Image 1: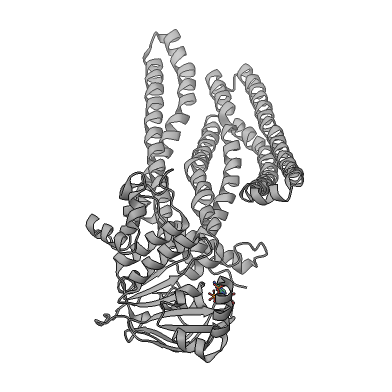
Image 2: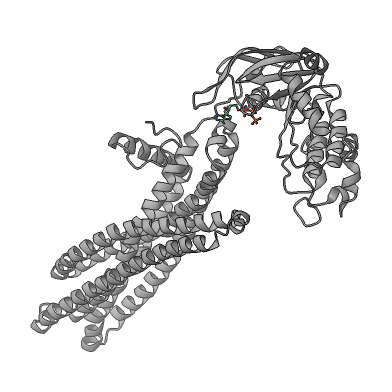
Length: 602
Ligand SMILES: Nc1ncnc2c1ncn2[C@@H]1O[C@H](COP(=O)(O)OP(=O)(O)OP(=O)(O)O)[C@@H](O)[C@H]1O
């Protein structure tokens, strides 16, 4: 099994070599994200080192003030050392504050820029990837990459990393300062660090497991909720409410238990660290106090040691938490880097060929096609469509009609052979030329947020209002548009702007009319249309098909009447090919379909 791209995203049984490859991929991504900010990273690191050092100087200055400043006042009435200590203390505090501000702002700027860059890259990449990718990688997963995964990385960059850097520096500097002031105290704090590390390690291992459990139980709870609500009609129709409620209760129960357990370990960890801190301070004060009494330690030093020790263990919790954030962020980064590793299967050529002036002749030359699953959908396909012809594709479900349409619009490339438009292999055309020449109107007739006019104008960016209206008139959409609250300016997502399925279809016809492609592919949606809307759509269709090559995946036999030629497909092959009249006369498959349809009308 491979770990390339998003494959194996759900696997947990990676071999060592595979894990290494995945980690290397994440590191590489992180590298490319951070490299442009390298100097800024260095500057912020210098800032934080100096800020923490200035902060650490405080207790030492207090020790100096007490041990040197006070005796010199009492013995020589010399106030100078105390003044020096006080002013230095203030300067150090202000310096630490100011530098910490610049560090915080600097690190936030880096992390925000990195996140911005990553978000943009992900979006651009997801749009660039071929339809093949999107047909197998669900939109839910892409959304998770763009939301929860990026949030995990954001949490780490904004909070976790900051706490780690400050915490580690603070502890290291404090340890050094204590050792310099009094080596014995340094040794004591060093010894106290051992149980603190053991406890933190225990917390880290437990909390990783528990956080994972909270995430899983919460996801299971949400999935059940979403499933119930999206299927609420079926739930009510089949009286599934009590069963669903029971299941939901169980999942909430699991989630609650997981949360209890998490809170429980926090309840042990935090007081545990506090207790270690308290025992350490007590020991330091006791040992230090005895030595002060003995005269081998100055009182100011003892005070500084106590001040240091009081804050010493504070950052350790943040450092422990960092590793949790780190784990979810690195899992997120692994998934994101996997998606970014995917390459479009349909690529634009480096040196595209120009499309000759012509009106859309299509040729399938010895085309063989299979989806990545390996099943051959079109085994050996030859087809010549002269320009201007209107083709109706008919056939049983799964025969390969949509596949053929997807090959003409180059959403996929053939496995063998070639598909040509006006004599040029589609693989040699630029995306711009191809999209201008071939337009596919899908069943869903998707409307984007914006006005009716915006939606029609998608066919030809920058189209004038007159052009938009002319297109709408041509396909017979003008009347219903004028009846909308704001006419062409109606927002399609607002109440009142809601359009019916048939009207949506007409809007997508107007869009295609405005685009004026050489080749139009139409996956005709029918089920949702009533007879008057169907008639409306039929009229729009006739205008739309004029003067261009058209391939209609015909679910309705009434559409077939306007076709010049009918292709009947079965198992990826054309089994009948001719004008509607010829095929009816020949008495084959199409004739019997046609007969059944005529009978159903009576
Ligand atoms: N994205 C895909 N990945 C793998 N196999 C696919 C994919 N899309 C379609 N197929 C398979 O290819 C075959 C042809 O499908 P296609 O959608 O072209 O049929 P169709 O004739 O358009 O059917 P319908 O009338 O039901 O839309 C089917 O067996 C289907 O299972």
